[in-house]
Picture 1 (cartoon, one colour):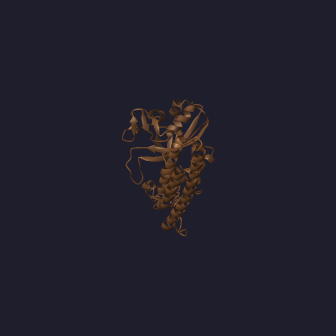
Picture 2 (spheres, rainbow, N blue to C red; picture 1 turned 90 degrees about the vertical axis):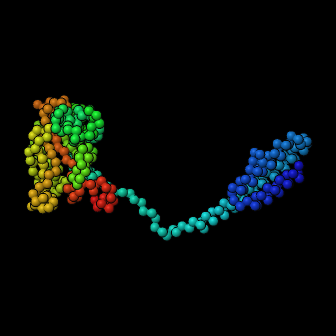
Picture 3 (tube, one colour; picture 1 turned 90 degrees about the horizontal axis):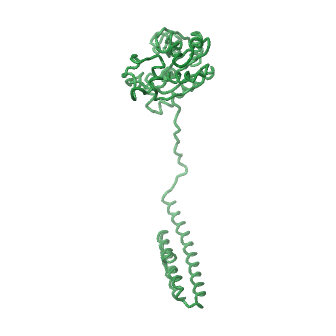
Length: 339
């Protein structure tokens, strides 16, 4: 048995020394020390050894195993070191080269404009409220005084999911939902994405953004609306900005108006930017229609209010003098870095 163990030891040493890679070294480990290895086979044959010889044979087997394990570990370390050295020679890294630049993007002009508008109205005591983009026809039209058969419900202008559900065409449904809650007074703006069946061109898109405002309280008048929007225009476009209100019609407000601001490019003298008029249209507004208040559970004899709506893209286009709305959605970082 002693001679057999010496033979196994000699053969294992030879194969370990001949191993030129970690895979081959592992094959040697399995062949001699694995579950079906030669040393394991010797241990399984201990039952055939005389009882008085078993302690000696067991000691020889353990000594052989320990010696082979030590030799395998030493060889493994040498092979790993050699492999690492070879890898370092083949994969040279020039630490003097500049690192890869991390692109972190840039805030979108719409985001910058929205944050500024929110800052202005929050400073006036308004709350920012959001609502669903997929809306019930009831909130998108009916509760805004746009009944069945009204031209504003024309399917050419609206994306219908089914008869009762649409992609909202304005953020006014958020105002109706807040009024229904009955928590008065109300001072809120509702920014968000809206959808209309428009062709894509320099000033139109089937998906764009609106910011709508609503105030409901006792003794609110058109003078409050004018004062609010004048202050908004001065904060957004400059302290010298003037406003002009022109009569208009919206189903959910009465009376209604379109609001122009004096051209901040030429100071109202007339230029290419304002097409020579000295004025730029920015939003629509009006006093909340009494019927809208009634449908939302508010007594129009006790409460009045005003509402207004402005396109976020229009604010961005005007503020940054961008002449094509499509530029906002092309994701060209050369364009976005300018703002």
